[in-house]
Amino acid sequence: MAQSATRTAPINLRALNSQRSLIDRAATLLGKNRSDFMLETACREAENVLLDQRLFGLNEADFDAFMTALDAPVKDNPALRNLTTHKAPWE
Image (cartoon, rainbow, N blue to C red; front, side, top):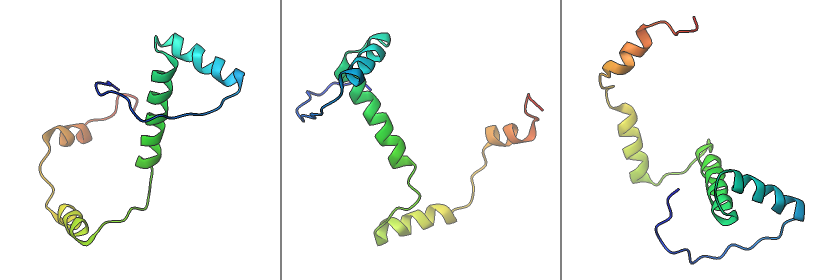
């Protein structure tokens, strides 16, 4: 995650010495500082949690747009058609 804006929102937490050491070792291995490592890791996990949601709410306009997209005819996709007509290499 490229960070071009100035960070202004503080996030404070307490950790065990062993946890901080583990984080520092992993960050060093990736050539990052502790803050960058923790922010990137936390943001990646937050995105995964949000993307894994099964239930979401929409207002009426967004629901109508969603249903319109679902009801639209499927567009031809030659690359996908080609992919589904060939055997997988492991078969």
